[in-house]
Image (cartoon, rainbow, N blue to C red; front, top):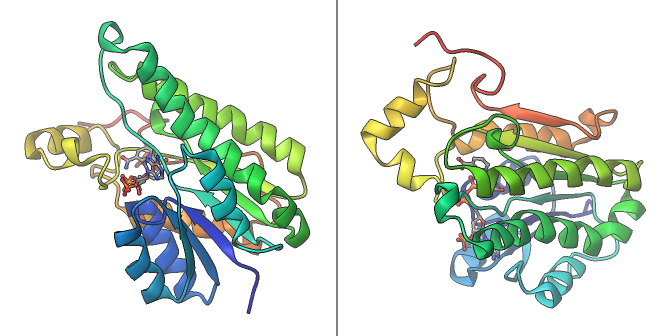
Amino acid sequence: MNDPMIIVGATGAIGSALARRLAAAGQSLHLIARDGAALAPLAGSLGASFQVADVLDDAALQSAVAAAGPRVAGLAYCVGSIVMKPLKRASVADFADAYALNVIGAARAVAAAEAGLRAADGSVVLFSSVAAQAGFPNHTVIGAAKAGVEGLSVALAAELAPVRVNCIAPSLTRSKIAAPMTENQAMAKAIAAQHPIARLGEPDDTAALAEFLLSGQAGWITGQVIGVDGGRSRLRSKG
Ligand SMILES: NC(=O)c1ccc[n+]([C@@H]2O[C@H](COP(=O)([O-])OP(=O)(O)OC[C@H]3O[C@@H](n4cnc5c(N)ncnc54)[C@H](OP(=O)(O)O)[C@@H]3O)[C@@H](O)[C@H]2O)c1
């Protein structure tokens, strides 16, 4: 049995796509999510160990990560939120909640796994957003939190080396948090057209890069923020 990789937020669209890819490649897995009714069958179908935890409950998160064992080959923190509202409606709690979920949760998950990651020369993948480096209206809350994830990623990469830490910045990808936009046909079409590769993201677009970054094939890649965004962060679309 190989050393396990931990996926926090394993029941999400990207987390579950990553879990399926890694399991198909023979990687042993320890899955963490807050919804036990969704997590148990997923873990069962992949032969993975699992533990239920809400990442905002730090004690539960620490114990769920520790349950992976003393050696950890990788950790992907696939938990996150999309908060869209104008600044005038964004409360102190909105900013604090987004920071707690996206930044502090990621930092605490990695802290819980640090010894195991060091023991196994492991790798970490965190998730920011295209909205961390490109400005969009109504994105102050999530843009600020996801920029925090990018800062956290480079700081962790420096502190934990040779454990590798990288960050993926997706654009709009079909998932539960994106459903209010992706399931509105007119909105989905308009947003797709903002991408030089004119479609929305699929969870596997992002999971494929996460799988690569967690693998030994990415053994000299650390401290990077990489977009999976149809070119939206760097290019003008023709449309
Ligand atoms: N989808 C996009 O358009 C998009 C764009 C930019 C960045 N991202 C980032 O990509 C990552 C993966 O998201 P996704 O696209 O896969 O969305 P998703 O399917 O909605 O997954 C998000 C996951 O976060 C989990 N979660 C939320 N709060 C939690 C908590 N307090 N404790 C434990 N788990 C919690 C959710 O659990 P439940 O299933 O129980 O709700 C869900 O499984 C996130 O960091 C997200 O911010 C996504």
